[in-house]
Image (cartoon, rainbow, N blue to C red; front, side, top):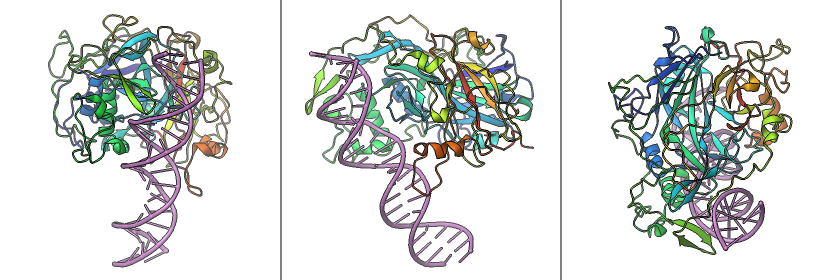
Length: 534
DNA sequence: TCATCTGGCACTTTTGAACCGA
DNA sequence: ATCGGTTCAAAAGTGCCAGATG
C-alpha cells in the first residue's frame, strides 16, 4: 500500500521566474497534492521530498494553441507519435535520489465523440478501454540530477488503435477523449519502488488532453500540426503559397506560404503566460486528493480558471470550420453533421481477449513479467496493462541468483476515466470542457479481484521478486536481448547495427474503466544499476 | 449512403555509419 | 590509433488521399 501520493494539475499556477535550464518562462507548476492511502491529505515525510517536485510542461503555449482548437492525435495501426510531444521540465527533485518517470493515457470520460458542425460532440458511450499501458521514460530509473538537467521528453511515445499491438504502444480508441498523465516515482533505497511506502507524484496537464482520431477532423488542428511539426513541412504549401487545406478554410486560418513560415517548434519561447487556467484536481479520488497549495495566494475557494473550452461550442462563434469529406479528387464542403454515432458498438474483439485472457493477449514482447536491459540501454519502454497478476508485494519466486534483480510489484495508482465536471454530456450535446482532476473510488490497495479500474502495479528492481505473470526468462541478459532475437521486427534498423535501445515490454491484461478491475502493471527495468547512489 | 479506417504516397527530419583530416 | 567534423543514405515521422470497410 502506498503511504503517500502526490498529485497535481497544472492549472491554477502563475508565471514565475524562469527555471534554470529553460529557455522560456514557464508557468508555475501545478500545486501539489499529497494524499495518503487512507484518503487524507498530509505532508510527506521530511526525507521524501517528492512533494517539492515541480513539473513544467514544455511548449505549453503550443499545447494551449492545440487545446483551444481541440487537440486531436492521430492513432494508427503502426503507432503514431504525439504532437506536440510531451516534454516536461522537472525541478525540485533530490539530485541523488533515483526516480522513474512514466506516463499513461487515461480516458477523459466515458463518451465517444463525433466531429459535427465544426465541433466535438458527444456521440454515445465510450467503447471499452483498451489495455492500459504505461510508457516509462527510457532513462528510468535515473537520479534527480539527471532528470533536472534537461527536458524530459516522451516524444517517442506512440499511440495506436491496434488492439493487438505487439510493440507496447499505448492503445486508444478512436474518437475518444484522453488525458495523458505523468507519474514520477521515487525509487531510492529508502523508498524502493514497489515497496509499501512508494512515493509517487502524478501530474496532469489539462491542456494535453486530446481526442484520438484516425484522420484529422478539425482542419485548424491539421494546420497547427503542419505549421509546427517539422515532419509536416512538406505540406506547408508551395511558393505560390498556400497550405493545401488553407484554400478550403476561407479566411479563418491564415494562408501560410513557405516564404513566411518559419520553424515554430517553440512558439512559446519568450512568451509569458498569465495565470494558468483550469481547475485543480477534484476530490473524490481517495488516493489522489486535491490538496492545493496556492503559491500565488489565491484562496482555494476561488473558482479555478478554465482553459478555453476546446471541445465546446462556446468557442468564438466567429470561428467557423467546415466538415469536409473526400470524394473523387476534390473535397466537398459539408456544413451538415456527420451521421451521429449513437450506438456504442461492441468492441471489435471481445474484451475478454484483452482483459481476462492473458494467454490470448500476450504479445511476444509483452509476455515478460519483468524487463531488463543491458546496462546503458536506454530505449523506449512501454508497459502493458496487466493480467491476472497478483503483484501485491510481488510474488517472490524464481531463481533469483540467475535472474536480473527481480521486481516487486505494487499496485500504486489508479486509472479511471478521466473525470469531468459540469453537466453530464448527453448524446448530441456539445462536449463541455473538462478540467483535469481525479475522481472515483479508486484505491491502490483494493484486493486484486475487486481492484478498481486500472490500478498500476509497479514492479521494481530493488527486491528480489517478480511480478507474477508469464514466466520470465531467467536469462541474465533479460528479456531485451532475447526478444530482440525473437522479434527482430521490434528492433528495426540497419543490419549489423546494434538495435536502438529498447526496453522490453510487459503485457498485463487490462480492462475498461467500466469493467471489472484491471490493473496496470509496470515492470521496471532490471538494470543492474543499484537504485541508490551508494 | 455514410462515417470511419487503412495503406500507399511524397515529403521531411533524424540517425548513424563511413569517410576524411588533424 | 584516436578524435572530431562532415557527408550521405536509410530509417522514421508527417499529412494527404483514394479506396475499403462495416
